[in-house]
Amino acid sequence: MAHEDESQYSGNDHLRARFTMWLNTTLIRARTRYLETHTQKLEVIPLDAGLSESIPDPVDYFVDTERSKNDFDFAEERLAKAFSELTLMRREVLRLLFVEEKTSEEIAKLLCISPNSVYQFKHQALDKLRNLLTEGADENG
Amino acid sequence: MDKAEFETVLQGAVAGRHEDLEQILQLYAPLIRKYSFIKDTFDEDLHQYLLIHIALNINKFTF
Image (cartoon, chains in turn purple, blue):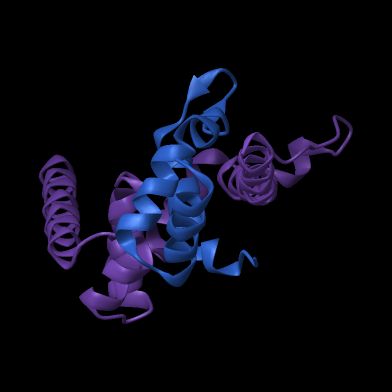
């Protein structure tokens, strides 16, 4: 009896141990990928790169840059900035909905949430985006 | 959770059953939380990223 319990326990440990190892490795890889893609890397510029020659006059540069942008560029930038301020789940739901064009049911299955939650995340995300963009537009006049 | 129950739950999670996946995520919550820290600070985005990653990839675990 005791032997049977022991063998059952060790079998349990084997599957659990294998899954725990798999999950551990998966988490380490996912974390590394997240840090690589979400950590900003600063460009290293050598001190003797002749900065004074390469940098244009700040006033001219600003005027040229502003002139070269049209309304579409500004709208895109503001949207990207507002999008980056959403939580990851809201971003993911919007990406799957509008970029990958998946249905709410498919997204619910992929993210392991209910279809109602997909609608909630979508509406929360769109409300937040609308608020952020409206605030931005008000600030810019 | 005994051997049979764990195996059933894991098989369900791998097959895509939400309730089973939730159980697995609860069971391994401390491990997932452990990897959700960046420079000693809990990172909510990273935590959600890891949860989504597991949900999308658990079907790759082979028995």
